[in-house]
Structure formats: structure tokens, C-alpha cells
Amino acid sequence: MTANPAAWGVSAPAHRVRLTQTRRRPESVAGDKAYSNRRERAYLRRRGIRHVIPEKRDQDAGRLRRGSRGGRPPGFDKERYKKRNTVERAINKLKQFRAVATCYDKRAYVFLGTVTSAALLIWLRS
Image (cartoon, rainbow, N blue to C red; front, top):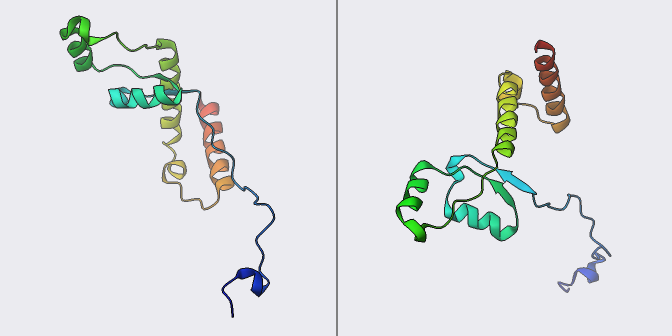
């Protein structure tokens, strides 16, 4: 007896089928002040991902205290940050529905139907 799988009549597939989608890098990330640190910004910059993260007050004061060695402030686009706020408020409205907040559905398509019906109710109420 040999340990070779081919001897047992088992052969490896000629090609492997990828069942999942390939990972895609996001174009941009919008975060809150909790992600405002040098390590997070460096990581996003290294991967080529644009980010909109407001700076904390103490970081701003520390940079100004260091003077010319403090560097320039990170870029911040207020309009793009407003869009993040809109999305976050919409998600919070959806979470007011117990079925969406608890997510007991076993199948993704059932949960999608639950979220869709909750969004329709929110839309009809407004």
C-alpha cells in the first residue's frame, strides 16, 4: 500500500474553482475621531486608500505646541464627512426594528427582505 492519492484513484482537480469574489480595496474610508491616530492614517496611506477622519482636539493642540516640527494637519473634507453621518443615521433608524437589530435570520436573503421591509416602512413614515 502506498500513501499516494493517485494510487487510490483519487486525482486532484485540473483547475480550482473560486467560489468567493475577489477582495476589493475600498476607494475611501470615512471614520470617526476614534480612528484619528498616526498608525491608522499611515496604514491607509500605505494601501493607497483615501480617508476622511477628523482630528482630535488634543492632537491638534499637540501639533500646534510643537510648532514647525509638528507638521501639517491632515486633510479633512467636511462634505464627505457629512455623507458618513447620513449613512450612520440611516443605519440607526433601521436598527430601531427589532428584527434588524437582533438578526436572528439564518439566511442572507431573508435578512435582506427584513431590511428592505424596514427601509420601506421608514420611507413611508417620512
